[in-house]
Amino acid sequence: MRKLIEFDDDTFDKLKQLGRDRMATLQEFADEAFADLLKKHGIPIDLKDALRKSARLQVATKPGPAAPQGARKQGRKR
Image (cartoon, rainbow, N blue to C red):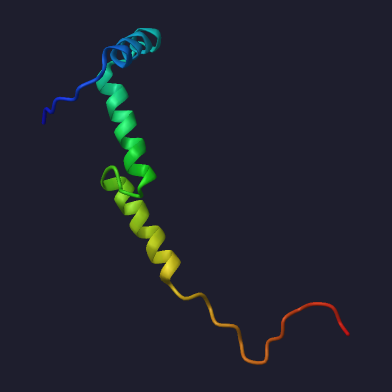
């Protein structure tokens, strides 16, 4: 899908120079920037990322093993 974005001249010149310095395209910079933005807001970037996030949520919501009855916290003896 193609969309147009507008840059001011100074920003565009700096991006072109950075692209020359790093041998990267403006598209690569845009992909990186939007991936970082989505990550910052907790939105999965692709299916693999969504599956990882889902697995972490499932592990976090599972109750842990219950402590056996009569178990005491270990600490200093009084």
